[in-house]
Structures are given as C-alpha cells and as structure tokens.
Length: 81
Image (tube, rainbow, N blue to C red; front, side):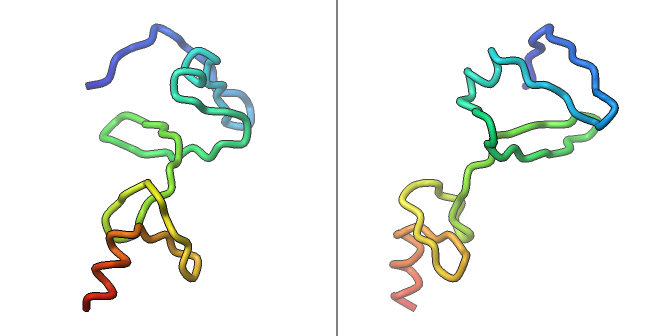
C-alpha cells in the first residue's frame, strides 16, 4: 500500500524530478546511488537499486563470477550438481 507524503515536485525541462532530502535520508539514498524505476499500473515506483543473486535474489555476501552476482548458498547448490 502506498502512502502519500504530501510532497509535490514538478518535472523540469530535462525530465528530472528532485527527491526530497527527507525521503533520501529515510532510504539512505546519496548522490550517485543507482535508482530502479518500475511501472505498476498507472504508478511510477522508484527504488534504490540493490544488487542481488541472479538465482535467488539474496543481497548478502555476493560473489562476482563472470560479471554475475551469486550468493554462497547458490554456489554451494551449484557445486552439488
């Protein structure tokens, strides 16, 4: 369920919208952080990008293998195959 913040921002001539500092602080978003953009019906959803395992979606202790991120649990399962 989405909750309104009561904050309204205009889109500038380059299509940009400023995310208010209160929201950036709440979600620990700092300059240069990647943000994912989703469409949900008629809504646009912004989410701080968090790298995850390509198999299970885990975000902890990821290992980079050939430019793909894999968690230790999935690596273990692959080894057992």
